[in-house]
Length: 636
Image (tube, rainbow, N blue to C red):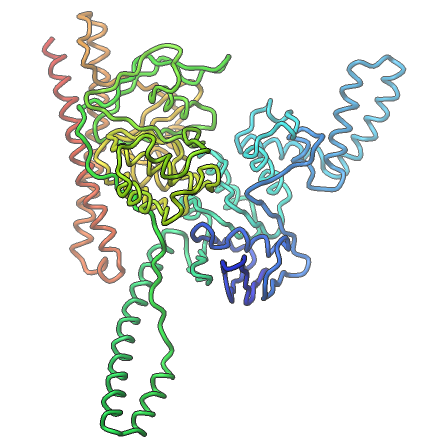
């Protein structure tokens, strides 16, 4: 049964039409994703449903008695309270009672005997009121949600006025989930979450929340896990697809292919009729000509498939670096009493694509800045290999000068002609006079595209990427994903975009509790290994350097340690090679049947086969290097 209906909705801002005659519905307990390019009206649609924006025409129908919880992209919290207390404000008076209870508790700590009696009576009265509206159980639940969304115990006591925008959004999400409304309207709910927060939110919506949800998101991994229907806003229309995001992508491709065929056939038929009309006219057979004209008028035109503007981020061929791109030895870095990573050993090899994962504040961004030479480590060293041209992408765009024009900013670090720079910016959707915009006036998505254009202009063979997809829509994310996948250099990428990580990386480096741990494979492979490890209650194994060009000392102990590390690395690589070979065999078997060609998956399987062949070559090259080092050490 539909609990929310949107009928014939239209909305425009001046000449820009967001949607016209838009229709959609959400059924009880249904989880629906709203997707579309930046500026297609996704956030505006949620605001219209909430009544914060007025539609130009059409109406929104909401089931009687339905409770709705709304999470905008920019949130605020009640002032004059701690974070924990503000999240409790889901019922009238709850936050105020929590604040007053805390105030009385603080006074009791310094009260005289006479004052303590009076304050104790007041505290008992407040406590009874708090318990009557389930304050204590909600307080415990709120603390649990805030912990899962990445807040420390100390942060729970921060005043709301001191919180960042991202912290307020995460706290507002906890408050909303605590409220448990019948319908959730979530606008980019994973934007400020780390991977663990995203995983927790997925589990919560799947296992603990029984209502419906309408979710605006660019997080494809999240949508794959949570939603059962995808509605795409495109060219002012809402097109609905059953299934999660991956199924949507397949169905959309089929729909576009069928539409293109129908359009082509119809155009041929129209051309045939028009030629017939001309011929009848020249033969002065007017009645038959009029009949043909009426036939033309009755044809219901098939729309030509629209081609959305998409950035082109192909990085091209790069200068070939040495086999070892980065060598990190005994690297340590901390801030105050917090140790982010210590005695870290790590080697990045040519062609490797490594994901940096871990909770917010675990040291991923700091590590990238140390490698990029922007900040100094406390101890240890980072050594760049031969012919390495490294370029760093900063998630906050602090390297962009707000006072420059777009084209001036691009040319700050690139030796390009005016035409070359205009062509490059056009590939990143800066058309015409857009190149003369001030950097200070750009949106988050535009800043991200400019930063990527600057990166490409420097022709790097090592990419150091810190959350490169944060402000990109899905089409731009896919374009960047394809570019990184085809890139023949090395990549280190810190990101909570799990779909991207699954598509491009072959190794995961986890930052946790001051240590790093290395895993071969994609993000999903890493997640499965971690879950298995936790299930078996095994201890984490710190990452060690695997190969060293520096000749080890001749002590038997050091040689034994190096041999052990190399044998473990060789075993990991052999397992990875076996897994890739097995997948290649499975794809070959699938392509030998007719099914992939009937269901449209043949192209995807073919692309995957090509990528796996490249990955197999890289793994084999790494295995050969490890084997050579093993032989050398064994000879000693």
